[in-house]
Image (cartoon, rainbow, N blue to C red; front, side, top):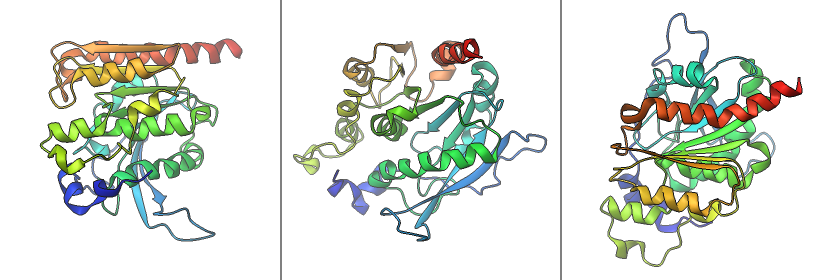
Length: 281
């Protein structure tokens, strides 16, 4: 896929809002289940022992060794430590481990964000998971789920599209069906985008993803309108899919407006797989 104009410095400066943090920021005394680390990434497939071009950060909030693992790609202007308080709901209410992944230039990641790296770095995240599981005592056979919020819907959908055999299910929160309409809504002149084909292709990729799907979206989202959620839902050929509309919620207040609906839906989504695992033992 070609990102062309989208990866020019001017566009990137308007599209991404990175925040930085030390790798120790947010670490808690007496919270041994919280782990921070980095994943090496390359600008092109490495050969031999080629050192990484950059690293991207992550924060892992462990539940039990056998709990399902959600790899979470956050929204723009967010960083992994922002989830320090929210993670307890995933660990305790949903019963999953949560791994929040940063992008280049975000948190303690190095480098600068780009649309191409947003997608390309997902390969290195996936390859790093077995080592991270072993390092922190998460069993290899625990189910893997992907979750993407807003901008993070693109990397989550891409992994589900390119590696469906490694994933149990896909969760999208406030995601977009096509990038260009969101950019125009943010103030990008439509003529600047010309006749480019959306290289992220969320809606196009969704058409071939048969995984169980949960989409959560705010009814009053003014940044990425609810119709994007409906388009993604309609595009999915999954036989097990759900679209949860959070009433009175915009883009950034879904939990405030529908906390228990939000986490209840996620818990129900992963529960069938947990029950299947238990019945097999």
